[in-house]
Image 1 (cartoon, rainbow, N blue to C red):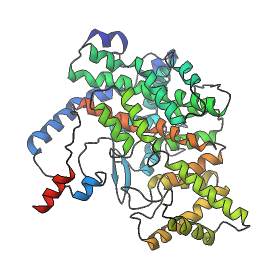
Image 2 (cartoon, rainbow, N blue to C red):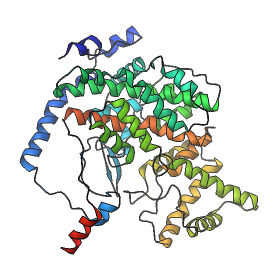
Image 3 (cartoon, helix red, strand yellow):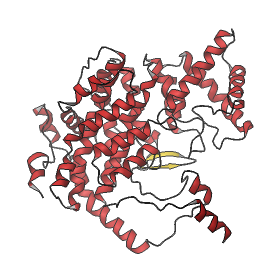
Length: 465
């Protein structure tokens, strides 16, 4: 092992600011120890699969798939989650209700409150459900890694306030790349077999630094620029304090929001981009910055703000006309949207063919915490009538709501009304899924991704055959 690693990050239990906490965490198995024990077995299993079954055919490609965005083509190994069209997302085999039942919460009582993001990070990396003690040790470690390089805050403060928050977010993370342990180790010539150890260091540091970058942008653009921390709290709670929110109910919403947006298997644009750029051996900082740029598109991460705009336009129209917002008026507005050849924001999904479980858990949160909220009632009524309208319309493969159909309304309830910023919250969360997979990309020695493209003439030649 190169001396570079031993001088900076070789110890499996990092020192944290609170000595008592550091001593307590030493009695539990650390995240790093858990992963180092798993890697050899995973490597051997994948090598056996490739050697014994590498020629086994798992699918076929149609011309529609080739020219239609590669939808449904099975061509990527993804460790951390799987999205079934009928069942929805599973994180390491666990559904969202499973995660809510078994992952540690802030209170320490499983099922009492929403899972901590740190617990889902542990689960996605290791495939194991962590103990509360393990999660607490990971929280302390993330807080110890969160300090931004000295040049980053002045850079963020210098950016134009009218620059889109996602553009600022990407710039801020790219600027942190000066701290990359993997980039330095690669330049020092460490062997490929050790890449994953250095990549893990970067992954934990990127995840740790993202909340402050995001909070600085939020406070600069919408408030006074002041960011206050509270590292006595968990990752999500501290993020809420940095944003300027001090409400235990909002803390719970943020825990739920960050957990359910972490991962949605590998084919989505932000996860795939992170994986693709990482396959070039770019470090996790710039790999995930690329993923953020993919997330910033209106067909991906910006979709939730489009939903809120549509709901508010609906409400404003009928308020101005002196009409109640009900099943009849919602149906009228939906058909106006569809007849204008526009989509209904928040409905449909590239893979799912049922109500998105991420929508369902947010609906349950709203029923528990804000059942009388006016916008929630609108969303609930839309949920009752929209599938029937879209089925009648007949041009939507999935007439059911997705995650974006609900998330903006929950944030709005707590006074978080700056919907242009919502995708930044998504970006803080999606780092966990994309970067956990990036760890296993390097641990398993996955190669540079390089699919074969074909020309239209080649496709015509296949048809003529």
